[in-house]
Every structure is written in C-alpha cells, then in structure tokens.
Image (tube, each protein chain N blue to C red):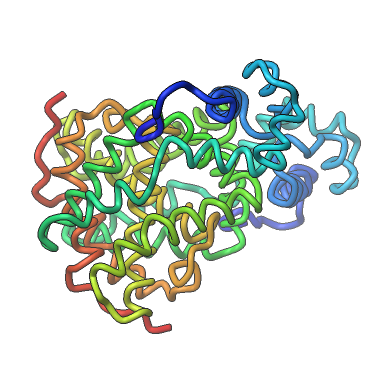
Length: 198
Length: 198
C-alpha cells in the first residue's frame, strides 16, 4: 500500500487488495478471478480489462505494495561500508509488515511453478539486485557472482523466517538478525570473495 | 542409493525407487500410490503393507537415499575450525548427486504444505543440525540460535542453486561456493555472534 494512496480508492486498488488477500490465503492455483471479483465487488470483466489474466493480476498484486525503486534508493543512500546493514534493515522492515504475506505467496509460487520461478528470478535479480549492484560499479561477471551469493542468504532468511518459521529465528527482533546476518551480506557485496572459476 | 545396495533389489527398494522418480517428476500431490505401484510392478496393497500411506512413503523415499548419520559423522570428523567448510562440502556433494532431485521435491513440498514444512523442519533441525550442534557443546539457547542462522544460509543456497537456478551460482564449481560461503557457515557456528535478545 506504501506510496499508493492518492485520494479515494479506485476499482483497480480494490481488485489488487482483494487479489493480495486471496492469493496469500489460498495460493495462486486455488484462487479464481471470479472469486477475487466477488471479494472486490466488481464484475470479473473489470479484472480482465484492467489486468489481462490471472498471472498478470498476481504480478500486479505482488508489485503493488512494494515499489522496489523506493526501497532500493533507501539502501543506496549512505556509505558503501554499511550497505549490507541497510539492505537487511529495509528487507526485514518490508517483510515484517503486511506486505510480507504477499511475499510468502511469491516465494511459494516461485518455488512450485516454472513460471513462478521465472517471475521470482526476474523480480529478485533485475528489480531488486541489479540497481544495487550498479551502484557498486563492479565488473559485470563479478557483480553477477556477488549478487547471487547475496540472493542465497536473503532468500534463505525469507524461507526460514517467514515460510518454514524456524525458531528462534522466526521471532527474533530485527536488530538481532541484523547483528548476525548483515556482516554476511556486506562481505558478499564488498568483501574479499574469490571470483568463480567459470 | 548410497549405503543401501546389499545384494538383490527387494520389493521395498523397487517401490522406493519408483516413488523417488514419481515424486521428483510430478510432485507429491499429483503422484498416486497406484501409479507408483504400477511403476514398481507391484500391487498397491504391497505399498500399504510396507509403508502405510502416501506421506509415509514420501518420507521413506526422501530418507532412503541419504542416511544423515553417515554425513553428519563426516562433518564432525576433524577440527572445529573447519566445520563450516566440511558441512558445505558434504552438503554440496549430496545435492549435486542424483539425491538432490529428491531433495528439491522435499524443499518444494515443505514450502507448499503445512505438513511438508513440519517434515522439513523436523528433518533439518533434528536429524541434520542437532547432532552437529551437540558436538559444539554450546548452551541450548545459543545452539538453537546458531543452528537457525546456519539453516538460513544453507536453505537459501539450496533454493537459489537447485530450485530457482540463479546463474552463475547454479553452475558454479563446488570449490567456488566453498570459498565464498564456508566462512559464513563457520561464523554462524563458532564465530562471534551476539546472542538474541529473546
């Protein structure tokens, strides 16, 4: 919802809100466009008109609450030596908010379906990590290597904290996670990492 | 299959082999006991006799190729300062082998279903991590905190390398991953990590 509320809620917003709830509650496969239309109090044709099909609606529903550019800017503002900490703080703040529920659906769908994995790869690499890596001005192969190492720790934290809910990690205050995990992200981004032999 | 071949293949082995293929190819939900029975060339009643139900068969199928005790022993043999590296080497060797295919199914199922998440938590925490943590002789709350931090990097590496297949991480030689990621695991296990405020 962040950065989206301008005046009265539009039909599109109502549809997106309903879609986020439905996808988060029941997963992609079990949710129908008809159902979302009923929840939003609109005709199913309106959904097709605004979003095309269910997959495009899903993407829009995931996208809507998080404008990655907003967060990426926040991560990039400050010293290069603290970028791991800012990235983790930002990521945890977003995921600990209601937005995280839609995120769990994204992870689940991304891990279940081939198209979902594509969507998740696209989202993670091109919309979140690429702008961060650009700011670090690294040569391309090194940037890709470091960004996938980063993704391995970020994705794992999301899985263990929000999907598998491993304790005590699932209930740990953000500052404890930052103290433990930010150094890992910082090292993957700017620390001494041997380049891959590939 | 490791440590399992003693003499001729038994009916149980044939069923497990068929189950691994079927679950890996089509996932848990779309696989039927009847289908596995047909693949194994046995009567469905034989499966119920040997394994009970589909969930128990799934667990047996996942369990069969990996005897965690064997690998845990390997990880624990050697100096405390290299335990992160041995853990990662062992994990990558297992996952890069055909066993990894069954592992991907375990991850997918664990992330999709509540009972799958339970199974995965149980497997990861109690059968893999608990014996490793016991060997480190840490006080209980610290051991659990460190083991879930470890799980966050291990699960994330599995997800990004074997499920999402993010490149270059997915095709990177094992020694490159070990050089980059073993220090993370070592730090989570024995390095200076502040205890959680919980």
